[in-house]
Image 1 (tube, rainbow, N blue to C red):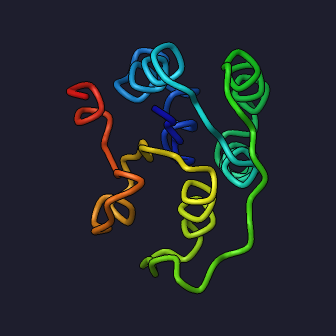
Image 2 (image 1 turned 90 degrees about the horizontal axis):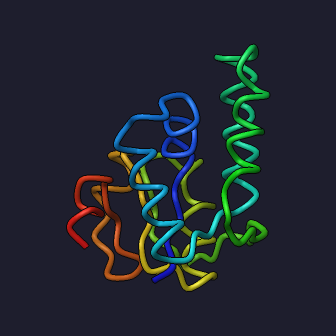
Length: 129
């Protein structure tokens, strides 16, 4: 199974090593193929730079410790479902283009989407997979 975490999962996992986000991310990496698009890493770095500048090195170290496929962020296809937060749409497009099975997220803007593939799962749901 191919699993793409969204930005909030990466940020939360880097900040809180004992969190459910970290556990879900590690499960995805160990049991499946972790896929991350460059948009997610850039957005996460912007969050750290803005909110936790003193912890940016921690994020970079965390990211370099993960085994994942890095993909480029594609152009948005007009057929890609609209989202309340349009900033999340590149992540959805990358997941579709990269044939990702699951987007791992805690973001309600993803969780309310009614799509078949990729499935949108919160960490707690991911553990029951």
